[in-house]
Amino acid sequence: VTLILTARTIEKLEQLQKQLEIKGATVYIFPADLYDIKQTERLLEFIRQSGFRIDIFISNAGKSICHPVEDSLDRFHDVTRTMSLNYYTPVILTLGLIPLLKQSKGQIIHISAINVLFPPAPYWAAYQASKTAADQWFRTVATELKPAHIRITSVYLPLVRTRMI
Image (cartoon, rainbow, N blue to C red; front, side, top):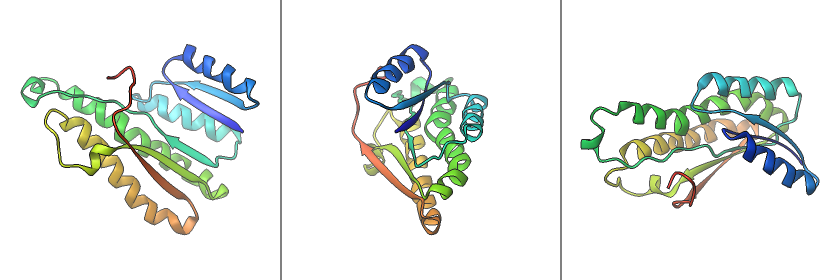
């Protein structure tokens, strides 16, 4: 298997690269902060120029935030950052990868959150809005991409133990 991995922390990417290469994978790493649209576009350019066949795109970047609205009155940046990473970035990457996924009749795996299937919860407005927007976008686009033989699978995970929590 050939993988292209991206994350903010180059040391962790290099560690993972070594672990996967020991198991026989070919791994390319691309350090990037996907909050930054310019870095996201550079990642797409790297993928396009690589000439790789893209069979599967796993959209897994995300940001969690839990704030009461009263504590967020002067923190609109929390909303824009959360929307950027949880919604805009996966959309930008998907739009950029559709031509390659058409060639391979590939698949998109969108890592969502189980909370999008539940009623809204207090303190999670920015997070739930961003994840719900992405979920609706991917579900809608799935119907449009079906004739091109591109499948989209959404995975609804519960809270996952990461640095964010």
